[in-house]
Length: 114
Length: 114
Image (cartoon, rainbow over the protein chains, first blue to last red):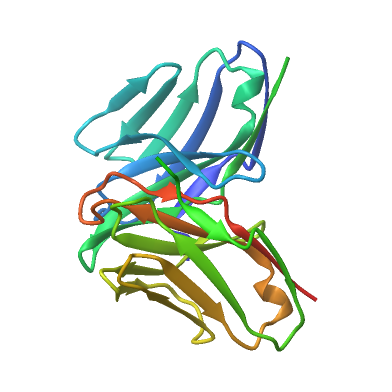
């Protein structure tokens, strides 16, 4: 059973456009929602994260929108650049055995055309 | 400040063999987690170690095991390798796993089983 569902699987955007990636979760015990960015040959890197008591968080061109009642959250990349081409993973975390363990979505491969 | 270091970067093994992967966390980080990344399943949690103790474990067979040393370095071992074990194995460390600050991942070990 997939606890975090991510869509789309792949996304192609023109330079300057808006990239939107969506995630949905089932377990209401999740209370931390990070996004990771992964370039080929590298491990995922934490991009931005949000808590469920906030509906939106913005860092530069990256914004997370969070809808607690719908159990959905999304990543918006404004003014997308070719350097943003990467795989993006959403995740949902909850404290388990004393540690926050993230459950990841399947990932979205983003290609930004120049 | 050095990041998370995983060795080796690439490994080719034959079915039935065993393999040991190594991970050195960021200095001062006491928690180390391991993930298996495949195109079909995405990032799947293997286990987490904190202060030399396994705190959490994912749904993987007993062929997958790990340990953590007193200097926080960690190793994971896979015995009786199967073709399906071919994957990118990622190690991640965190300063305080009890707070939701997210992981720092290494670049991974690419394991190919032939």
